[in-house]
Length: 84
Image (cartoon, rainbow, N blue to C red):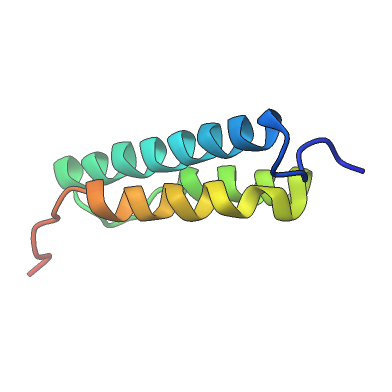
């Protein structure tokens, strides 16, 4: 059994805290980049790379951290100016 899959293990919570911080931090930094230089052409979304690698490596144990990270990214994302 995967040591990260058991919610009673501290490693499960450590993994999800790290994923939430990485996902929301990268999304916020990318949003600030969009706000400063415009959103087109869009660069690679780094937070999606973190999510893909986490789900591939850790499986279902990564979903709570990614959900929390995406929620934090939604709340912390800077407002973008209208492209028109």
